[in-house]
Image 1 (cartoon, rainbow over the protein chains, first blue to last red):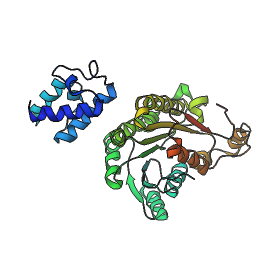
Image 2 (cartoon, helix red, strand yellow; image 1 turned 90 degrees about the horizontal axis):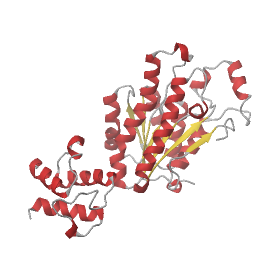
Image 3 (tube, rainbow over the protein chains, first blue to last red; image 1 turned 45 degrees about the horizontal axis):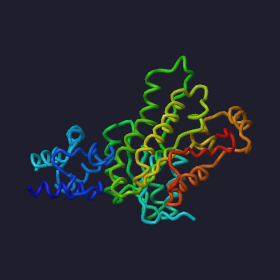
Image 4 (cartoon, chains in turn purple, cyan; image 1 turned 90 degrees about the vertical axis):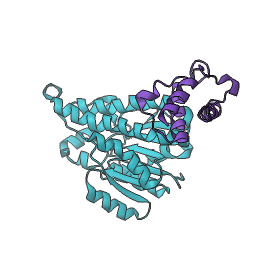
Length: 77
Length: 245
């Protein structure tokens, strides 16, 4: 697994308090990992900080799963 | 009684009577304050009076870009915005049948839309800090209505509904959002009334007198305090009994 994916996973595990093995490629933050809509906003804020990037609101709305996040950040950084 | 040492507060309309009193109360409790308003001179004078821990950030609330930039400027000046007091407000009274779109829009823009923009602008920092206080200064007429003030009353009622909605969303992040609804307070806005008008209004106030800006500031200070952490989505009416809600 890439370095980016590891770092994203660490943030998701810490923020949502879920088991690491639940955080798989297609895992939806809301449907599978128990996040509410505000958690998804906070996750995006945490990603921005960790990776030093800016994620605009319209892009943030497309980041619904762990895989989405890794893909977006890989392309952005 | 309430200690705000280490907290940073942004107050709009700080050049006015109520805003100035709010700034003094929060500052007196130990907070650092950012004073915003359109008129620079009274803001500078207030900052000079307060001495340290006071910043002046002029802003025209009719200018969307300037409003969106204000929370960032405040955070740069103070380090963060932990307390936001949306106090700025204007009136453009007219009987409803003659009310112009422009009068409606100007009042809604400054009283309600700028409040929304500032609430949105401070949210990220408060979410990260897991602590925040937003206090929106509404008005008794937002609850009771007032002839000639359909625009003002709509904006002030809108602030209450918006405060409650935001309060729901962020309650479990340590952020509270409340409104304070002043009644008939002695300020420049009420000085414009004629003696007859004042006497008429006072007849409806069980306390038999106008309120003082410091009495609004005390309500804001309470809602800004750590002690008020369990109070959210509420409207604190400070009106001498004029409307018992």
